[in-house]
Image (cartoon, rainbow, N blue to C red; front, side, top):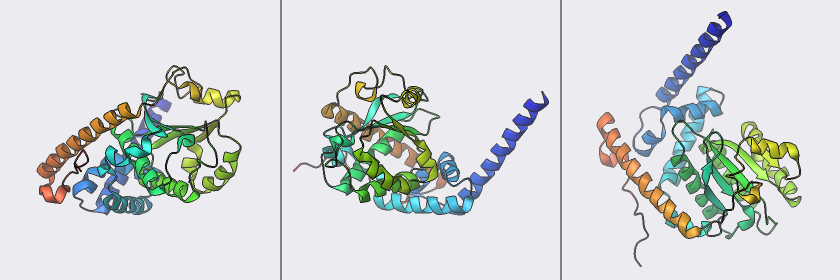
Amino acid sequence: MFLRRRSHNHHENVSAQQDAKVNELKAGIGPLAGSSLEYCTDACLRRYLEARNWNVDKSKKMLAESLKWRLSYKPEQILWHQVANEGETGKVYRANFHDRQGRTVLIMRPGMQNTTDGDNQIRHLVYLIENAILNLPEGQEQMAWLIDYTGFSLNTNVPIRTARDTINILQNHYPERLGIAFLYNPPRIFEAFWKIIKYFLDTKTFNKVKFVYPKDKDSVELMSSYFDADNLPVELGGKATMQYDHEEFSRMMTQDDIKASNARRSENKLNHTNNGYSRAEVVPEPLPLTPPAS
């Protein structure tokens, strides 16, 4: 009884301390408007604090850099038709299932690389990260990555610079969004590449990366603890037969673009009511959801 009460009190104290940190960070970044205001929810501030071990000053610096990046890169305004060519082979797509913790799953297949424009490859991935976040169940803030190395070769490998920039965006601008990443059956030629890119990973991200080999019982069991075999594609050791359909996936992404646009409009109206900002101050005009006629 005493131990239970003590544990409960300890949890309350930690929670109160964390709430105070969130409020301190909120005060530190000052008043916000537009997309920055929409982005900086209490849950968002907690992710930045968690990423910097609840150090407010470090979290503030990290968040300021993210807000600067988001204002410049505008990830929430990327539309599917702008990056659809990158997805033609299904090299990255959102799965139609979740892991055992209810997290959105992104499936990546480096062996299906179909372009050479590193900047657009990153833009395509950023779009899908934003989309994965949009489709997170209520109460869940992280996603899972499944990386299938079937067909991987040096010819399909991304340049070191692109890999580094991708890691930088994930770690610095989407803190605590990655829950787990499984690298399934990477070939030996990947080892040299991994030896380089692992130095770009911070400790927290590095610890979330797991290698899985079909003949290694422990790694297979670890993966099974995160995913139901009935959901996993056969290529990833599961029982589901899946084939990427680019047209169907494109329809789904276009619908999600409309859903995201409507959600932003609703959020803008709420911000206008609660904060007194004019519409022009809150958000720029939305981009068209379909490419203009030629």
